[in-house]
Length: 159
Image (cartoon, rainbow, N blue to C red; front, side, top):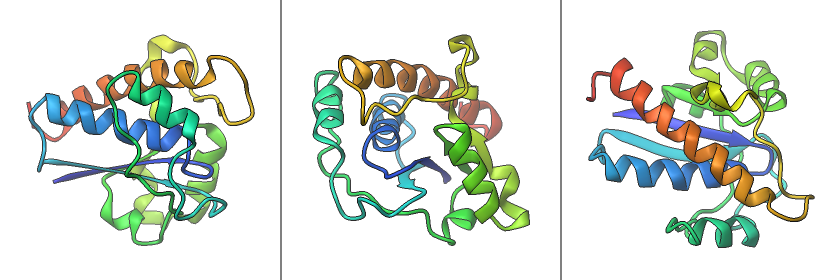
């Protein structure tokens, strides 16, 4: 089993979107039971809450259900449980690396590094924005999730 944890700030927009998209890809590629997907936040602002309604609606338009997810904060055990801990932006990366034990630092990576063609390492936070921010996040997440699953298939010999 390969564990993947997506991390953003409050675990209500970017990371639950990535969790939903990745779960769908894992199912489509026949890796259920071999790749575990979860998400968490660096902060506990929204602990126990569902994803932002705008994230749920945008994902639903693409056939992805986020409604059953609940926000949680990154736990100490996550650094041992998950093989990959993927930061949505460089701020999350710094926070995670400060929290992680030394032996878990190599598990922390930037999510958008799996979509280098996007030309950025940061998934923008759509929470305070207007317009198509949630759609833009979905576009970026779909591209990176595809690259991520490809990399997992190679790195962990799941192909």
